[in-house]
Length: 482
Ligand code: SAH
Ligand code: F3S
Image (tube, rainbow, N blue to C red; front, side, top):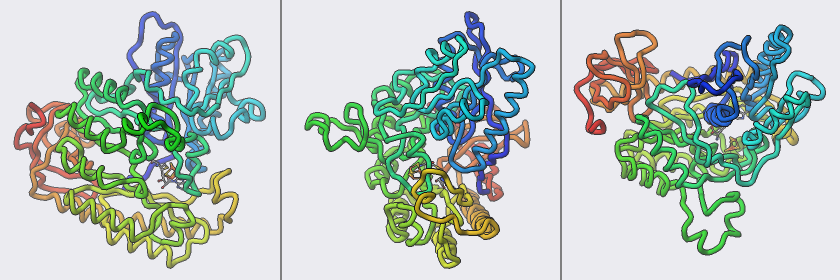
């Protein structure tokens, strides 16, 4: 079934093993994208070395941090409700300090401190290494802010702790920021310019995870296809790099090759791809290595050329189809998922029909679908009126959700009767007697546990399905297991 991120749900609280020498308690909660969850691991790692153990009990916390999301208005409203809750607890426990991390910190800067007096600390996505200093300020009774965006911060030198980990799958960030400037999107403003992390530090982190028993890595970035490491610095300054830097630069397909070759029994995924930046050599790398999953999250946002242009997406519908054709030509069973926005300014019924017909052409495995939410500071907010009535946005959203459900079911049915390699992650939510894992295409597969355990790669014969889940029976270990 389609996966819609529920922005009303409480954020995930993150905990890790306590260090006996630490005396303070940190309650850290994350909202939004995977990058935020991954950043919270970096933050917890920094604070674990500065006296803080994590707690799941808000009432006993000395420090409450919320890693925030600005992508849609609803996400911000959810965080505001949480801040009210923390402030209510602070009335009972006045020594407790409250801090805002992430995209809202960057977007609203010191507004939280000055006008709203809701927090003690505001720290943007590039300033987490400054947290120990900022906390000293807070301890001395001053409010503290650092929202400076960086040219080269990638946290490559921090070994993140793994919070709430299943011990099998982990995220490793490879780029930060985004230079694409889609006109609806706040990310380039909150996360700054794009920069890539040193490949050696990525490989070192993966090695450490491998040694600790992890079996699947998702390489993370706002726009992974744009990965380019030439010794550090912003992507946009690459042209100014020296000849030596250019000759030794590493792009995304080369990074994928290096990961897959150096860790042949580790499985790799990546997210997010951008149609305008995805190149054929990435598809070639995927096709070449069994341990790179056949799955691409390839957001398109709209099926209308006019809307794509207004969104500053640098490709047409036809170019997108060409890319999909190239993917399916080299990797016929590749799973593909989408992000879609309904009700972008000026979107007509005809544009909406173009979105439905694009979906009909691709038949995505699943998708993340949203009604347009105007974001302050973006080009769309400054230059275009948010003119599509809320009911129309919602009706169109429901139509694409319904169509996606049909397509998801069509896709899951294609797996019936096949034997697929599944990495076991955890017990199925619905049944303790079943394992839950994912196949290469990122579809959830459940099957009876027998003697298998989390971390095993198991060949599973698919016998039944819903629109979201494949159901099957194990036929033996896969050779990824040896
Ligand atoms: N490249 C990014 C995209 C970040 S935003 C990534 O790593 O996923 C995730 C999705 O949120 C976008 O693809 C888009 O579909 C949606 N989105 C972004 N801004 C939005 C807005 N203003 N209103 C509604 N949806 C939005
Ligand atoms: Fe946002 Fe477009 Fe970048 S959706 S994260 S500006 S690719």
